[in-house]
Image (cartoon, rainbow, N blue to C red; front, side):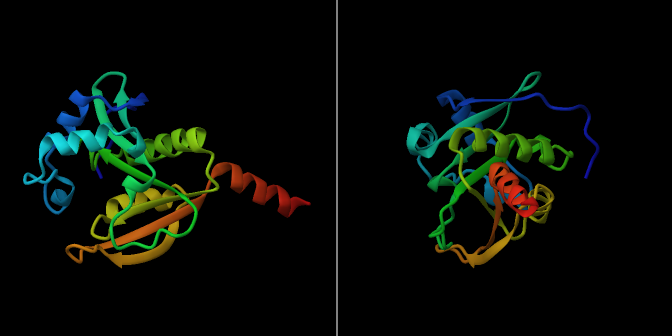
Length: 180
């Protein structure tokens, strides 16, 4: 991991059409190319999915550099093939390719978790990550998430892991009940 050049000043807003087009143009190097937009997917359809309020996509903006990433909350953060029957807030996250591997993961994950907790007040948080993305898994584990399941994606068999964590409010309630 490279050292951070500077701290990020992360802010959230609903994703715009221009930002969705920008995200679709991002290209990640191997082995992370699985996060590249599918060139066979119709761009208009992909942008519409980003902008659909039911998919809850947000731009993650850095005060100095503009669009630094994006996140989503809910079913669009799930991967076909996983068992999502348990009640939880599903979280998806993408960072601009030039920011990955630079030590910003903890800042991104922390901000996305806090923003999601404030919006949704869920008791349990859940994230699904490609198994080969050990870097991302480590960041989420350091944020208090633990393994819940492993599965193969329905269409191509690619392995994924699901990590979960109690929300901050649930953790505080659990600690308070231990003190009683």
